[in-house]
Length: 443
Image (cartoon, rainbow, N blue to C red; front, side, top):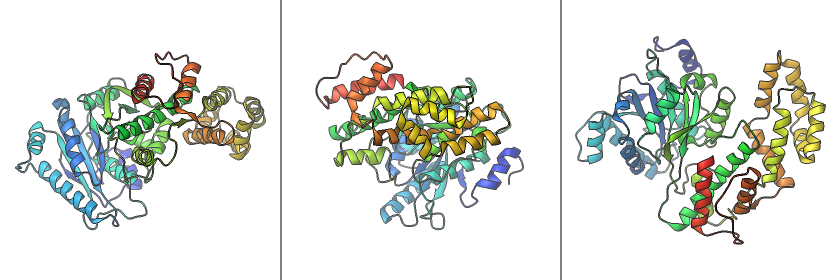
């Protein structure tokens, strides 16, 4: 292990990192590293790099763009060939080899620093059991810990991005400013799904982004500590926070949700305004759920996608949080009594999730009131919050028409909205876009 690394970094790497994969690229030290998993993304990587070189060049020498090109041993020949092309392309840029490719020339000239982790060549491929986006992010983020410049006062920033995204021209500078000037430890960059020009695909992505933002707005209304977005291509944290939560997980999907949830238990999650990530709006086979899968499902008309959680669910959550997250510490019986008054289903949910036993253990094992208050957030976390909303949906508060639900939640939150929904169950696309644009402004 590199003896120049801080003790906490060295200890983390010894315990949690892999020795199998290494960075091919610059020998410099950096203040920020953008980690990008890539599988079958040869053409998208070029589009992403085209947007990255539009950023302020003053940050290029201290920022590494680190691609983790990966696939499974069982991946098909087409994927493997695509990754081989990607690795060759990136290595040529890193080695500053002359090329007929104009973009390569521009990248080399710009001094944008590129790194590569090869998880595709024979002997380096991912095994079926763990291989996927979580492992790719983890390997990249763990290896990044070895190349930060720990001698500078600047924050060491781990930035997550995806290969099929593009970014705004102030992406790097805005993140650096937020962490160094505003002293934040973790956050997410604002995002906007782009349009494809295909009307059905555009309907699908508008529908999905409304779904994402509505849920977070509902959590905000309920004063939940988990009212933040968990989108892999937007996540950012500093090295200290990363180490405290024992790094990225190896999940094949929802790695972003669990990563952000762990971060939220040790620090505030901040929205990084001003810069934007533009995630892909395509359908995709890469993960079992998320944007790509949701778009495919919409286009295949598997089910009615124009449905959202009933706003009443968030009202139940709001009333529970008001009681449970207050500084007052009650007995399990008192909390359950309050829950039953709020809604019998909330009481049932707590019983099913063994609240009484868990709360009694927390009281027994905590040494101070501060510790108990912290344990409240740990027990009733983002996952349990989602489970409660699903429990209420499945028991009493059925899903509502998307636009009726939006109107109701806006009314509950006293949010002025210039468009009153018509009697149409699914309004025209331009009206759907109005709803989405309103959500983008407030969450």
